[in-house]
Image (cartoon, rainbow, N blue to C red):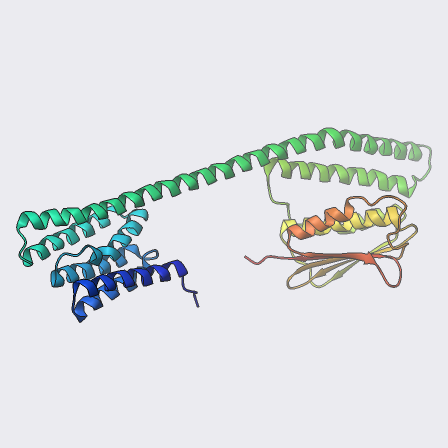
Length: 361
């Protein structure tokens, strides 16, 4: 149930008190009070249905002045509604309602024995208030339009700056990483080639370096494309998890991949976050856990995706200062509205668990 809009409640009460108080001083009958109270009550809807409210308030004011004579305060609800009608852009409608009410004021003056000139002058004096209300509404409308335009311009400028920053980052990544990764990949490839030329089997670690270099180049190109095109991350990234696990095993880190639930395609940002979390967690195992094995669990739940990486190493204890890996994980998870839990395991080792929700549109 919608809660009452307090400013409009205050407006209704205030206008009702003013018009009925004035009627009590000038004198009116039960029908006059009914018309005044009705016109005040419908003001509650003047924001949502200004034209309908203007019709009702104009009719009530017209009935009152024809019944009891010309009275400015009887048209106060219509005066307020004129403001809302003009502010919402219905200027002709407001003009017609004002003309009808002014004609009624002239007629009421004539019925009360006023000369035509006097009745017309009185009606025009009252019309000045309606014109002032319409002018104020037009001014407020212009102010709101300019404020909206300024906000839109600020958003466009922010988007433009963000685009320029993405391009700058893309250039920096390309210039700083592409060269280094290419050298690593070429050197590893040369070493593998020389080993095979000598009739030797290349060491598994060397093959892992070669494969990791190729994968890093592919990921770097994909990242640069996203930065340059501002595109959404592609889906299907989780299909590369087995390759990631195989590379970890080839590098001397026993790793097992377990899938819980029925795999399905998820939004690209969810899959990318899950993949990066697994990648970073396995890297941390290699760097900090010492001789250890790791288990990667990917759980497809109804609400989203659960990713957990456990190892049986030293529990994350390291002589090195903490890096930004866990911080990056937390930022990825927080951006998706998920939850990240990290810490030592009771049975030994370290655990990283990310709960990544999938927003249903």
